[in-house]
Image (cartoon, rainbow, N blue to C red; front, side, top):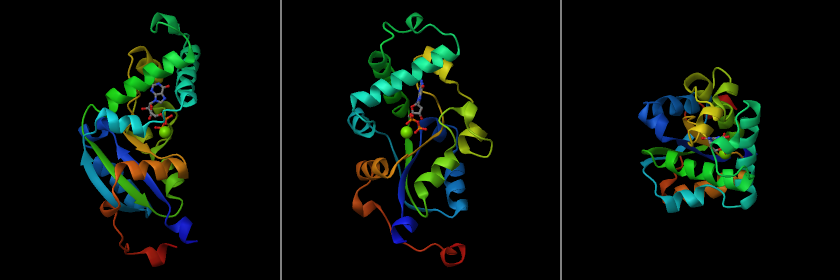
Length: 196
Ligand code: GDP
Ligand code: MG
């Protein structure tokens, strides 16, 4: 059970979240759930770091393009009015570029969070990627209003306050990228013996 109890995930308060003064809100929701912040820092990151953070797999980039095209179709927007090509790889590369700009537009508060099913628990705290689908009560549902259609046409990433790893593999890679071993701490939270 140790592996489940001590599951780790990477959480980022993105530049829009930091600039809107929502870092405390994100941290507080994580702590209130009973999860433990075991590493934390504020950083401004460069392109080299971001290139390692976002997958370089061409399939991932294509997937990003496909998702963008789906949004365009849903809102009857012609991709060719806004991009030189409607090829998924081309659009995906453009959206990825806009992600770089977004993530380097200000400082980021980065955290490692540990606790029972922390990956899924924090994804739930974050809510859906798209603010319109993020339930009320989630960070994105309570604090974000951006639209993929608007963001895609304006050539920028959707502003949605926070990042949280999606899978154990992503969490491991991201934690190794963002934190050195000696930046991650070990302590017992009061209440651990009572909550589970
Ligand atoms: P997340 O894990 O919920 O953050 O979502 P993804 O890993 O799929 O995407 C990473 C980030 O890219 C999101 O948090 C958004 O900021 C941005 N993003 C995702 N999908 C789209 C999209 O369709 N259009 C635009 N413009 N940005 C997107
Ligand atoms: Mg993701």
